[in-house]
Image 1 (cartoon, rainbow, N blue to C red):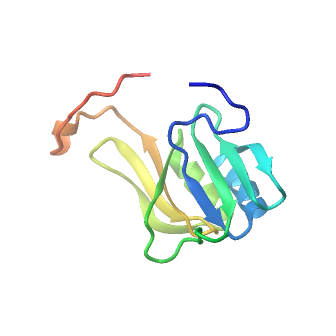
Image 2 (cartoon, one colour):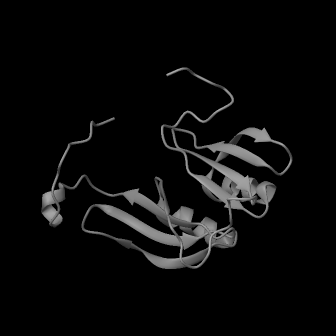
Length: 146
């Protein structure tokens, strides 16, 4: 693939529609540590990335795009080193806690929250490498270890 400084590098990049692009850029930076890479107009859209990998685009409401509603169609999962600290920080900055932080049998500690722009995030921290069969699932294709 050709490298392009004007476009995200991730193979899949969520585009989050928000009512205020600049406020969303600031909030995602403060709450989750995203860095703004490309600003397209004052309020049109912005490309954000996480140090170590992961990208999203925040874009303005326009024909064909709307802000999230109660019956959402997606979640974003954000893998972090300390789910408790990240969840606490996001709540302090105005996120709503939807599902309390807890440990799951598949080796993750997770909380679910809704950001001030209506997007639902699952904050996840890996606690231990867990084989899928150990909690009733099936390993289809093993992932390569980083």
